[in-house]
Image 1 (cartoon, rainbow, N blue to C red):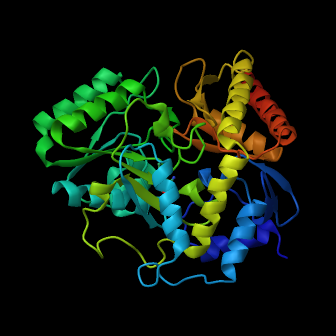
Image 2: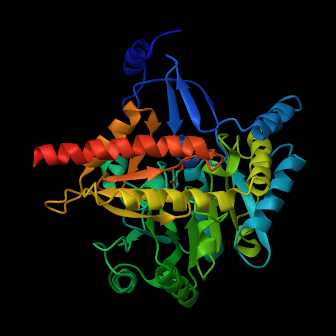
Length: 431
Ligand code: PMP
């Protein structure tokens, strides 16, 4: 077995630098909330493969489901020879999504593909072309995904031109951001100055922005958007790729809101580490594209579908929605209790277990990516894997498996405590 350093050197020589890699160590194996590297070091995984592992690494039921399917068939191409497991998965998703009336679904492979297909379906249904998204939103790395994404560096730089007729409205994020009224006014202004609302197919929004900094959309924003969509015949698409499957304490984040979307894009924790995504929505809208208009060779991969059935079982059987709320409340209380000792920790926010901590220089109030990185590195040195996010890179997000046990969760908070203390000390020394 090669050492981390050796593999790292080989990676630098072999892999495009365009795929940025956070860690300089390499995974050997993983189980639930624990990951070991090739040198036997143990990490508590609060990155969860970027929100994919709400049911943990290698949940025994997910493994059993994949193993069973492995001995039946691994690929037929669903569009050529379909299988019952995919049909029953769509039936389950249709029953779960917070959309009243008849619902239909389509299965794909990645989050970006789900978003792209939601836009295609909305265009086919409305016969309109324009799409509106939000600043700081993230919707994937394909060209339409990037067009919708509201952050240039590092995602969009050098990759244009993007599909036309995509517009952005400011997202009302936090006390410094615009108000809901200002955001909705910007939408109205867009209709006056840039695009006729009669040409708009859809508004795409993450109910809680993920990469953008765990910014929770205020209820008044979603209500305002729903009202605007209904007035103009525009479809409302919820991008629940990061928020889905229990992360926010409900199956879908849209369940926290008084209004419903027309379409939901989902992926990540849908299949416990296997590549699977979906779009679910009102049946009449989902049926707009003609046969052959949607799909993909690997869409509805049988192993991923089997894993997804197990994931949905686990979320129900292990009461992971309740667990999400309990763990999120515990983490929030812990972070709030450290604000006095760590004045750089300027905001704690989120829904359920979609919790984030924001860092700013207490002297200037300016967002500080350096302080967030310091906490992240100090935690990593103690064996706790954390991710940052936010347009200024100054937010730490917590994406632990909802299946983590209490003892390991407390161990992780201990590491976080030490990392916060270290950041606070560094700040004092610098002052
Ligand atoms: N939408 C959202 C909200 C996401 O968080 C992501 C991934 N971070 C995507 C879309 C893209 O998903 P994928 O990387 O699977 O294409």
